Length: 308
Image: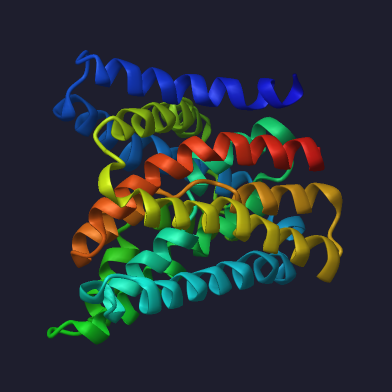
């Protein structure tokens, strides 16, 4: 029942978004508008206010970053090599390998991982969570674009990449929150309350949009590689993170749970957008978003049953 209590509210909102959109109550234009508000206004406000209030003196821990990102890098490499040797002949170039590797290792940390962890552990670990999330997109997207550039005529542009990362609403809001926190900037009661109102619907809107977007994807003919990527993402990656956190670094129970649940998150929708930009494995990563999100219910249940 404890597991159900944690997962049910999250999956209820996802299912509601999926069902209402599938039934035609919302269309792509409606969801696009809601997505724009969610990812450019509400979530940045949520991330900024939480980063501003996060106790970084108690949260910054290089060993936590290593325990999370070393397994991520390993699974990325495994996915890259699997596609290089077992992918279709037309999709064994480095750009396709990099995109598939991203699909095996990129976590939906903000939309799914954060609600699950806060439901399981409360807000005590939120500073540590955000320190992990801060580097997540920048690290994996940079790695993917750099490897993909080896197969593309125009090559990789650090200028374009830096610009896109700096202006990314998640990266920007977290960075500004860290800076404001470090400088002890006070925003004033009125602005604090305004940002709090904007931040309040962030997670609910994000989960609803995720469910709505799932209704636009189909597993189709790509289910084999989508299933393989999902297994690597929600089973192998958290297992490796658990080994690193519990046996190598011997973290506390709460810190271990936080890292494992974060790594057990399904594939993030942003990975599908990267696949679309690079023009490799678009349908496979779209399918992986669907499969890994559905299978993550089982994965989360198993991890919560074992760890909590």
